[in-house]
Amino acid sequence: MRRAVACGTCGNEVLCEKFSPAHTQIQWTDEAAEVCPRIRAGVAAGEPSARVRSCEALRGSIDAAVASGLLEVGGPS
Image (cartoon, rainbow, N blue to C red; front, top):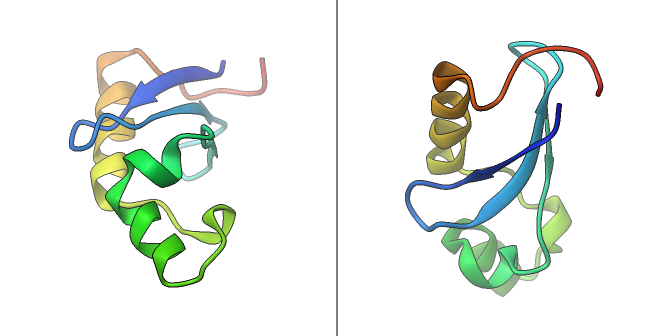
């Protein structure tokens, strides 16, 4: 099931779905390029925001959401 997860570092909120422990689908919000320092830096360097890879802070927040049960690992909702 898709859930909103906020980055514990910058507060950027993304929609996430975990299909397996290794497969995470992330849907960035329109504000991500302004809020997330990792995406903002990539965009400033000329990279399209959709091509900027996730950051470690967000990855940690997603892992914490899984560990707390907020984000469940499973098939599509």
